[in-house]
Image 1 (cartoon, rainbow, N blue to C red):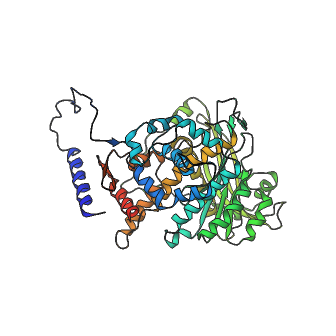
Image 2: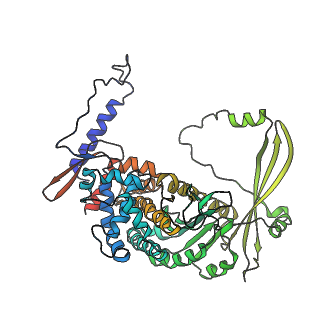
Image 3: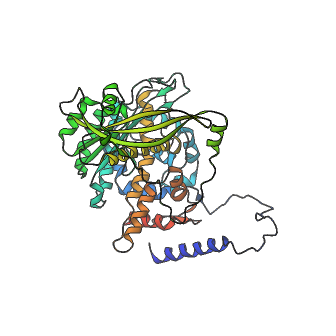
Length: 509
């Protein structure tokens, strides 16, 4: 960033630090919030918006070619007047970025003259038009749109350092999208009684990007369509530069008829949970004692200061006092053996975790319980404990699904059939991918600043969607047109603006 902006940021930081100084007790003899006689007026010349970061996001979409790629590949409108396909797609993505909860929230920005000026738009599609655009999709059109996103992400990945391409970790899982509607085509009742849809999500754990989102009827199994989606993704990942790919999923995705095909490609490693069927449980029971080793899990986080005394476990106290059944983990052991699935021509490595549990009631210990958890993989070199930890890391995808549900609000069903709701999910989930591309586009200056810049990039990638909006989108701005420039003049300060301006400078270059 230039020297002027650096000085302005430093000055604003000093001002807020002075106001937050805990040693300054002036005026503390009365409540600190003293505002009174408050009036509201309409500004005549000064024009501003709350989500000022949307300008940087739109500049990012232009820089990575997202707008051009969508218009070049997706053809749903006979006459793109007044809107093009990219206008409709970005309208839904920007709605999520600006804290839109549903299609109707588009109307708030459509009637905001300053927001329209900030995007250089005469107008944007209204909620009804956006819903009609979703209904224009056929399944092949949704695939075309996701293929277009693949082309864009390859451009973003191409700017990453060489170690980025060591291995792509692809996670897969299904999630339920409930609906209270009764006339939505394709909805059905799921295993837990939920009415709605059951989309499949394939994500890249390295960056959190959604690689594929496939909508299905609510009664379909989790793994349906996953193998075909993986087979389509693998060539694209290798073409993008990844040297290896790790496929991870829970027990539903351990489809043994596909394992040989993936193992034949020496660049592909798979790691799936495996059902505790009698055959593998018997093998685990027959293992000698010498085959088992203690599983020592690393601490969840590193204590940077001094360890604090743990507070009393109130929940545990209630369980004991009320004589509830209480299951305690006593220890964990790991072992492995070769297992030959019936649908495979070769044996694979089966890693088993034995959890030693005790079932208690009140202060009494009732009995011990042994439970097995199995993981099948074609990686014969990684230590068994590391295989377990790597499999457990897939649980981060649960956080991603939670973000798509309640943060981005992409996993909703606002339209009238399975395909149109699928299109809505894909276009709204683009907001989450834009967050990842925003982080990946952050420059890494060579020299002493590079470690901090890489840490900033990892931090932004790991942000929840709400935190990302607060840090980089919800930036109150004054919108000014001067000459050939559209100026977003920030009206406030937050500690993340140096990162924001680093990206803005990169986009302007």
